[in-house]
Image: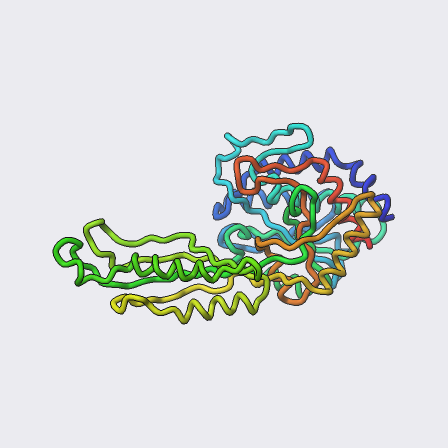
Length: 377
């Protein structure tokens, strides 16, 4: 039935659009447990009429939602659909950034990242359920803390991924052409702390050891490690320290974001950081942190999964391409386990994490048709 999925999902587009809007208007900022839990219940409500079973797993920033098909068609070893409930927008953003539709574009907080991906999953699974017969074995996991690093949900994601044959990530597609993501950079976060010696800046300046100056020197060194050709970036994003302008600062911290395509390159950056030595003998350096998300390296099993998605798209009259991206997602975790993982199955749009975030309405049906075809195939 692969060629018919586009018609099957299109027949339920208006229903899916209504849910999509409800989920956008149910604000769910990272860290607001009450808001995220309310959004999770709203998503679960959409699956009740389909016979899907909801399970909430307690989380500090919000409960994680697991949705499974009716018991009579459930099975292990299927596909894990992976997404998240939280958004980057503070509570109240909806008042100045309301849901609105302008031509083919829908706007609103989290409309693309990633309430749109949640809507794609619902529409695909709604069509599969309505088709009758045995449903493909699938589990939908929506975590509550992806935008803050998935610290509380990583173990759950990895546990469910180990039970699956493949993982499809509902993050937005890449660019306005809707490319799927077969590789993502790994991400490491570090804090470089300098401890110097305070002194009066006018009376006893040379008795001090300036922690801020030391970190400024180190920041220049760290920036030099970035290698565009190799895909390594080392970004010194935040620096703070000191107390007053007339005091030689004794303490300062530098927050560093490092990214690379391979685990080996990311490990090499970490090793170099740990080996840093202060230029000023009166300052002591300390490094904390490490890899937050391992790289999602392009692999044969991942490319085979992309080939399935491309075939499903062609059956629906669509063309799909793949790409690599520097951003991370929870798909990084599952790919690092060796589980075939394909990212970017969500809607097409732009302006993520900004007041101009938008999603193409037509992509709801298009991406749901592809997802249904992959699951059914």
